Image (cartoon, rainbow, N blue to C red; front, side):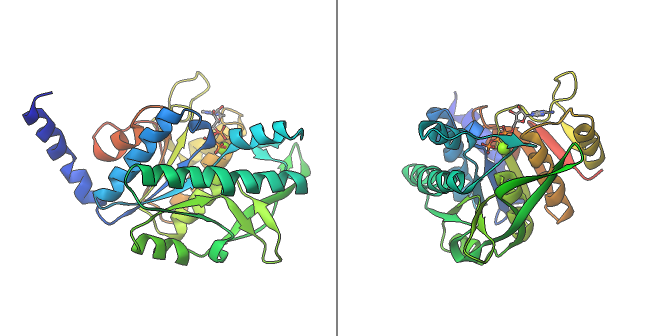
Length: 287
Ligand SMILES: Nc1ncnc2c1ncn2[C@@H]1O[C@H](COP(=O)(O)OP(=O)(O)OP(=O)(O)O)[C@@H](O)[C@H]1O
Ligand SMILES: [Mg+2]
């Protein structure tokens, strides 16, 4: 590429850099988008670049496949209801070890390897995420998911001071009920609540599909809350996409300006989303 063309690309990004300078962008990095090490490195590089041009990225991560791997390795059976893992005490132990001990620290290490500063946190630290026990209904019946939490309150104090110190906060989706019990929370809900508590400008959910797909499998580039609810009712949106959509709706209603579901397996998808005209993935909008 000619040097002049390179300069033009940088200049093209200027309006976007100006728009997001000093703003907070919460990124949910799904476990399913994390399976390829090379891609993982690219995603983290994008986030470090965002930090250096003056954006405040906050990472909330999942870790589903990694948890499955360790549950299988330790011979424990598991199942999901509405995209959420049924979590008994023994499973919770593994979930906590994998999310906080392994996945979280791995991301912190990758940020630092790429020249950024990061601090790994969970909802337990600084009493950040208070939860109640989540109750779900399936086919008219109430289902006990065990140690699965519903976010009641986010105390953003620790996140804000980490940002002030120049760190990229990396948050594992585990919270407490105030009685010393720890709960597993779907990372999408955590990302949505944190984006709300931080009054973030943008919430980006990186996953392993192009975005929301309709009944024919085509990408929906803009999805309203009403359409999303209809898709859930008719089963077009299913499994792990349900908490994602619910989180998008909650974030929009609590004042987050834009919410996107983006393919984390597409190299530099997030950079394209933030710094160019060409939007990728699904944007969820109020109307
Ligand atoms: N209408 C739909 N459009 C797109 N994906 C859908 C739809 N309905 C269900 N899905 C499923 O939702 C999945 C994404 O959610 P999933 O929980 O598996 O990943 P994640 O949240 O990115 O990772 P993790 O849960 O590990 O953090 C897709 O891979 C797809 O199988
Ligand atoms: Mg998920």
